[in-house]
Length: 69
Image 1 (tube, rainbow, N blue to C red):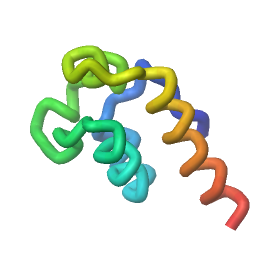
Image 2 (spheres, rainbow, N blue to C red):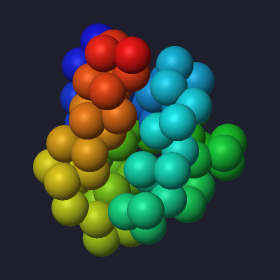
Image 3 (cartoon, rainbow, N blue to C red):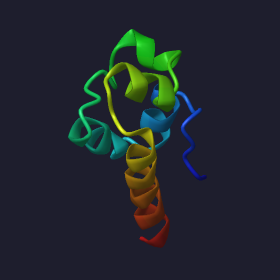
């Protein structure tokens, strides 16, 4: 699965728990809050002033490395 900016934060964290560290590294610390079930990656990034493209790129690196293992 390729992660896109319109996916819900909770959806990504549920499927890829290791993605939590990527969200945190980028400054999106609300991965466990109730809003993450309804908020897309892009919405969360925008609210927190985070570069969504860089975040999604790093998230996909995590997914890609998992597939190779």
